[in-house]
Image 1 (cartoon, rainbow, N blue to C red):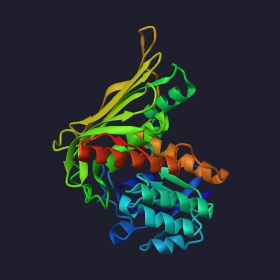
Image 2: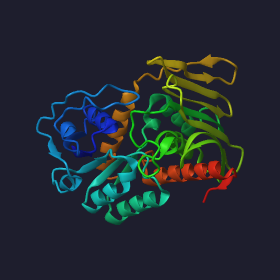
Image 3: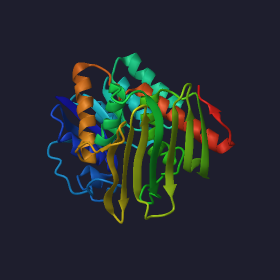
Image 4: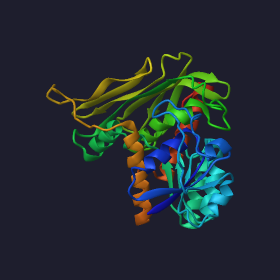
Length: 346
């Protein structure tokens, strides 16, 4: 059993806490939170753009700390689950690794590639496991794409388009602060940057157009340039239009088929505007029954974490170097948007 301590009880900390209840190989034994009300179990102030609302939790005999260093010193904790604002990820993760703990850190790995690299190197130096919470590949709709591409069911991947757009998250403090959360590029589009990197490899260059909001990208479209025939684009960001609460989706092109999916929240109601659909090579259309709820993806992700720790192995999906590459892509996209030029990716 992997004994877990969650650092940071905000929206993602709550989602992780709830999801661990579905994981046979892990349990939450400690939490750390500076807000005394939340530390006491009253999570009714927590809000997000999906999932259940916050409620009053019975934390039972779970150890509670207001200082993360105290949690790191707890010998009963095997795994530190970091759910803090991204600007704090690197320092807390490095401290946990130095304390001899394995770490599961929410995405993005950090706000700068150099900080991500520092985290990856520290895990290697201390022979601890570091996994980054890129949950998207565990969502049934995206897991279907990943498995279809890996298995080569419809021939080689030719590319595709990915979309992820939300309304301005007015409830989230510091969202557009480049030193705290990093705006839509690092909080929202990072999902697709990671997925593109995982499916396609590392692009050699990127061209991005769009709008800035202060020092961060607000709304943007990118074309990723690869050697060979891959054609990959993505659109993401925030709109000053509260009716566009959330949408994401894809159109993925394979040699012998096209995969489609789109989901949105419209009028506070979840709507699958395009269920997972396969345009077959003979012109027919199939809609595979993939099942599942978005929250199931978090349970699947945390199950992968627990299994990796039990086996002392890395995860291909949650790998720290892959997560570091994703923020390298985002940094390059922002630079392209600011300069109006195509940016080569190292």
